[in-house]
Length: 382
Image (cartoon, rainbow, N blue to C red):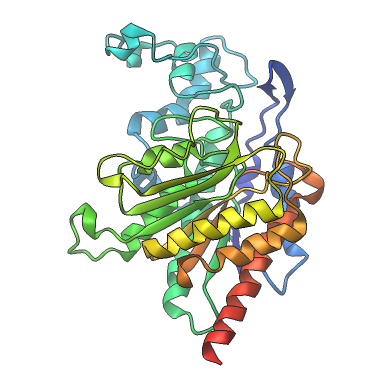
């Protein structure tokens, strides 16, 4: 399996975040990235590394998901913040545009004239997603990694033989699934999996296809501990992208991810939330839900599967409350290999914060996927 990475993903390194009212060291640290790379490097027979080019132009692909004003904000927020007297540690909001703030809801406020502290709350929904001097560079690098991985996937899928489904791993940082069209949060700035889905559609779509109904089908399987509110929001009315999420309830981001959220308009029925209880969800409970998710993805008939790969479902994760094991993650990877009936899959890194076992858990998912895929191919050719 190809592993795509960029050393520029390491430069985003906030000093702190606020959790439960306490200022704590930033959990989504560069060390996470390094231990995953190290763990996969130890398995050279299974993984080959590809460095994404920092010269890759990503503007068109960013704008397929995010609004121009939001992209411009993330790019320039830090400089404007510091110039206005903000803390050089990073841009952090202290006021948010709550739905009950009538003037904002009625559109009576010119957002272009808001001070940097006000814009911070407009474009971010929590206190764990600061923008530092290097955040934009790292977030762009994560998009470059994602697009490179998707390009490899499309090329290898066309050339694949009977060796099983093609898988590629995008080692991204910062993560992305909490980021919406014009909103950051949950350590996320640009939604890497959403950008991947749109890119894969653009590569698979015939030039003569002009309507939404003819878009190639993409399934997004989100196995992070937290609900991917941003990804759901982006595709909530889109029948060409089937979003499936397994996540904890009750937990962050608290206000999304119920089973009743199934899409709107033409997208009705193309969102599937599988909320799972905290403290009592271990390997068996999780795998039962995952098998159901895979069954629904296969019914959908996706041309590609994009996986939001979070291993914060681990039994020792410091901020999460599931009980998955490293052995369980290998089975998770095996189950994912059956999604889409053998179509290509791109894994995009999201969460996971128990540093000691983080690399081993990611490797277990990917190796489980590869082993199951090869086994299925061998059975099919027997």
